[in-house]
Image (cartoon, rainbow over all chains, first blue to last red; front, top):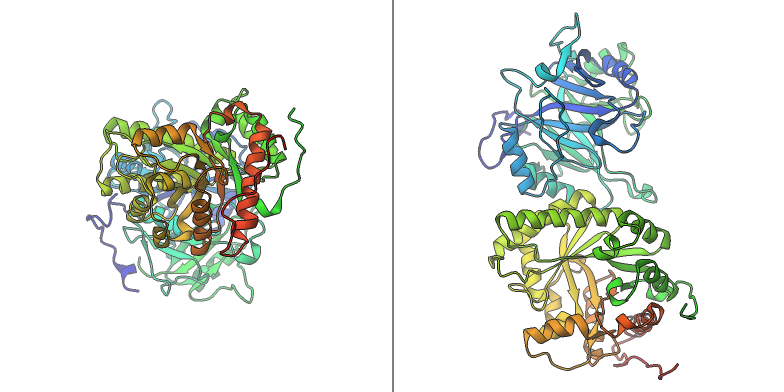
Length: 293
Length: 305
């Protein structure tokens, strides 16, 4: 497909929030050190920590991952799970306040702010399950991390990406018969675009693929297989997909760091993509061939 | 207690349920009466939950403990077509009802067409607002059923409700059909053929005792005080026809008895639930299972039976 290389930021109605990619993905877990080790195996480095909460920032290349172990994170009533879960996506937008107003006007639920003194207010709406979608407009001259985070002493501020890894997308599990619901949600509220069925990436071709209005990442919606329907899985953000220009080279580099990949008859590492084994009870990452960066 | 026998769930009436609105008293008594009459589902009013002695959380617990499936929650009124602070206010009300739906396990929120003189009559505005409501409901996995109230200001039939729903075109927005309003406005049942059966999220059934309703005021009064169960009024054949036609176009969803009646508010709940049970048996075992030659009236019990 040609549009993958079409990276110019659209400012017309097809990109109403003037979105410009993902700023960070947030995991929540009661075992931040364990997840940190996994992220480091995947090529990330711990670069900073939050000034007042148990929140760590990992980075490689353009990608920021926030690991949140703050007990009251997001006002969650339930205890934080040991198995890390994707708790939020932060989207880069032109104006976070406008993005909040636009999405709320179209039926999004805004999340009440829980900012403490001297902390940056990041507007958010509710996403799937208990997740949130943040809007970040400070990513050019200075970043949100400059305010709320302290750099780790000696850490490299901008560690390079391993073998060109970059954001490719997020996989969301949807309930049975919910594909159209979530497709409408992302298209209506954010301006995502449903790609034709024949457009496929990676090695797990199923579900609906939605392209972000900025053409910088994808959401893939996957419905449970009918044979598993006796137990309806929770709707959730299930995994991150990393793009790489050379999947097999990335697989080799990650293997050397201790990452294991799924190698079965149906799913195995190949030039189009690969899937890591699950870490810590379920965290997995997908690699997808993508030469657009 | 009422002395009515406790019945096991009656499989043939699984698609039928009672509206709590049809009965007097407190929520626990309604839940017990509906279950004991052989029903497996109940349509709740938000008021049942917030009025409950122990509060909404305790009400939710009582509903879940009853084992009854929740058909849906009603009713959001006068939502669409407002602007400015009125719209904001209604969005807040809607969010509160959606959260109640989620808490109590209701998959459907019933929304009645607006009667407000402050509301726009522009179909695009109505559709836009309903689409927004559907988006609010979507992450919570709730379907929104839009019903044409027969005294609605702009939308007062299932046909016009369907037009707005089609215009809004949201995957979780459909229509609710109420036989009372269909009978009151004398909407042609042939028009059911244009509906997508998968987009009918709820059918509420009731009849009334007179043949004609001449004015809008009379509609409102009749609707709020003088409804009876299907089979007990004067439109049994029309209701049977409605149910048979819905079945014919492929509707496989729920039917709920919404019977506003001052007299039923003075009767023991078990007795009212028993009226519902007889109505459900007639519709399920005779109308739905029967051929085209279904009886036009429900077999009646004699007084004192």
